[in-house]
Length: 338
Image: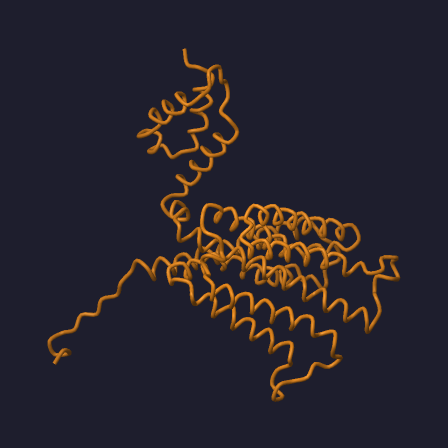
């Protein structure tokens, strides 16, 4: 008679592709049963999660298995850091702009009894993601993971707070939640790889830190000028600082080996596609004229916020595959050689 534990193991192994089960199921069941404790009736939670994860990866095929290599894990560590930096920068810039607007025009929420209401969510989001960035720069990976979960909860709370009174504001904020979840996924992928600071190296890390300082200086310099001064009449000082920060960031990434750097770009593609999806969403639902958030708008939001990043990842991964696996050979005829 088959033991209940063996039955449950076989149910978990059903997640694997049929060909894999045909070749390895009996061996895997034997190993699992030999490692079970006396009298054990159910698989341990960690064991069950590991089997389900490995089975899903097997079903996704060789492409998904490739994401478990060290190059992809290293790329995910750097991409997660850049994702946290992006979320910090956007929320921080909106906080600065909101403070400027409140100083010059007064708080528009005061009439509703919500003095400072427009700034609370961006301030909380800025601080939450800034804490994640600091933890990642210090290579405190467990702390960074915990702080990332807190930051995601802050994003969810910000949407929930605005939903009853300003439902379209919640729709406009959906991109941040998607970007936050993608950053969490990158951290999970990188958990067995090297920290981002190790991959960047001393010089790369110094360039990244300098870029962050310049970006912060550009953002916090805005409140000091009613009209920011320009450099050679072409660009304002805050924008020049942000451009310099971007140059520092690119210089830091350039010091990473080419194979990892290409994978960073592939993993960043979904993150960079999220704002594009947001713009497409607002155009698709004609948000300036819509009167209320309908179930149809929610469906369009979900489809675009999942479909566009997935498409961006697929295209970037295909480009990487072509770059690394296809070689173009040019054959010359004797006449051309002459």
